[in-house]
Length: 379
Image (cartoon, rainbow, N blue to C red; front, side, top):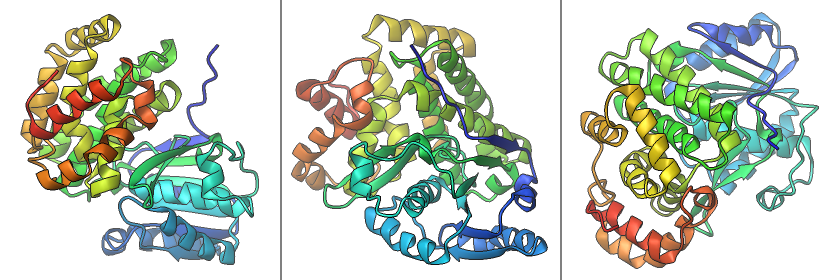
């Protein structure tokens, strides 16, 4: 039996749909956003103007950076509780949305701790505070998923906290907001989305619904990612925004795989971009997983669909985007890799890796990590 939930109450999509803010019911709005980019390009000013137009009370929590930690969430929660909102609007990349999701749930349920959420004791619903997610990058699909990735510094790992209560009530997919992404952010977030689609597609838990969505997301992303990188026009950016979201529908119901388990382990230790780690690891992970006959068949079907070998196409995309072919080439020092290897190996087996189509153990993960780090296949 499958129990599927793809998003909250509504998704609004299209260029200029940031204006939908003025139609949101509520009086006390708490905006969660990043550091400076959305202030510089006027996005936050536009959001403020829309709230002022409706005579709404609002406050802004800014400064959420990449890889938000438990400490970041707890600090923001103090400000959110002090304002006591009935609507939270998260505007930014996946890190902003993830942090806002956790803060909002903890604000609604006084006394709820991150440790309780981590151990599966989180409530499954929100009722008092409405959560609105407005992504400005096209990769995480956090605007429609039940996951929130938070860094736990004491353990040097990123952990995907999960509950249906994290799913935003409203997602606004405004491609205009994606126009300001720097090239590296566009590339890394886009490859994150592609990884979501591919890992969901080959997942053993995929069913007719999630497999069809994942396949459509992969096909759409492969069609539009290059144009989004090369020209950055509104059409391609909106398409990538939409297909990233579609990949989110698939993976939150089917699950991911060891690409994400590895990325969370290395990102938690070194702070390296999640999308970059995913992109580097993806060809290796797919090559390893195709030893499973069903995965091999799935990848062959995708290859026929796009008219070329899917793994070769990913390698070509990485080359086009200037993505290194190994973790070492991405700047992770060899001495640090060796010094923390036992931790990296252990943490790479956690999280999404537990849903990898090929069951992983220490000896097999060792081969995969050495291959990805040095850029030489050892399996």
